[in-house]
Length: 127
Image (cartoon, rainbow, N blue to C red):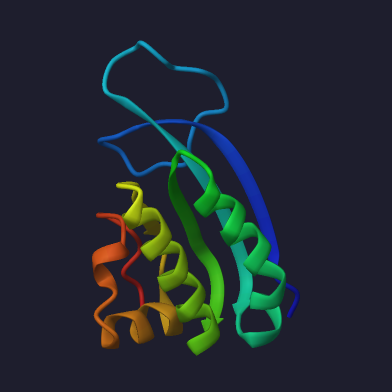
């Protein structure tokens, strides 16, 4: 399965978990900047080679990062390693990584590894 990545940059209300709006809401209240990335397919060793550059660019930015993983069907140790890499890089800069839509095998594995702290509140809990 081919990995598909869509990157969007925008503003999102800090109290809500939806993907960012594609217009500037600066100055309209409690908003934060976020880079949103939608991933589909498998996050395994072969696809993480492709994702490494994307994760490095996200880590080098200035915004919080939100990954929509609702279309990710499988994740292995390479995918977990990529998420941990991104989390640590963002955390060192006082930035946040949020995962939304995590379900199925990826949710099960991340729960076993106690990575649920990364899940956005209200994200899909379907197994």
